[in-house]
Length: 442
Image (cartoon, rainbow, N blue to C red; front, side, top):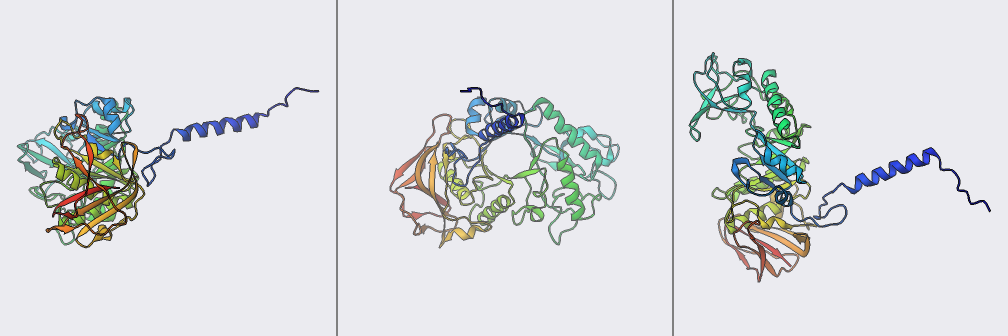
């Protein structure tokens, strides 16, 4: 009997090797499904989150490995981004560094050539190059006084090749210090040039002594701004939107550009502001508009530090929640010293309804409600859950829901790092007071 095995062809070996490589590659890819699980079926330990890490000294004391456990995105300063780099080395997902390619800080008079110097990391690269700046009709650089910092700001002209080159150089220098960076945050970018009926530059030059004359129209400005943002060494997040509607500017023209990763809304359900009524509805519709474009919608929940306004912001955000594109960004530290909050360990999955382009599709009388069929907390199943929001000016009953819910979310006020909890109390109320919300579970 011949026991010798037949020879294996080179082609067969090559195909086997390729198949093995593909399997290994796919095994390392984590895909978020709409039900809050990964491709392998494992439950996520938290929704997508964005935390400051070192920027403005927020969360700076948190260990990189701990931050990697709680955060998907971290944002650091626009100089060396050392916290962001440490986060990536600890296995963190996405690192972001701050930049401002629109307005240059710390400028001193005079504003007519030869103009005084500015200290901004981008503007200081083009101090003596007048082609990089916006100018008024009299030839002086446009400027505005910033009372918060007691200094002047000047504006870079995005149609200028010199200004775009300066932004490219500045971002490349940050990457040299922090090669693990994935994105830049482009502050003051993404707003419209003007609103319909306004004079040229009315929005962009709000608070300035005069509008710049270099760009004549909205179409020219859109092209110039996209070119400026695309010059960055990494893709960028913008934070501008239409100031009247809160929707992405120009129907999402910026967000459709290949190098724009998403949009940050810095006043998202912000406590202490008018987060009820029309503004609340516009906020929800704005988030839905961004996720509909398959771009990240980062909701910066500033000022949401008390348990009540944290629940309100969370429930409002759940109404727009898209597991792939929605990003929660609590900014302000709470009791315990950080902004890392335990409630973002609750992941809503399998929504019964999705609002698509209008938050009003989830309205039930005076209440907005969205139910989810399969939810988890810190990776463990907790059954169905629901968000109930009263964004009106009067108390209202909880509307009839598809399921019965036995418990309501209760927060103790502390951050997750110091042992703060997102626990459940049996017996949810039957009424929601004005400007408040409930998170329920089965």
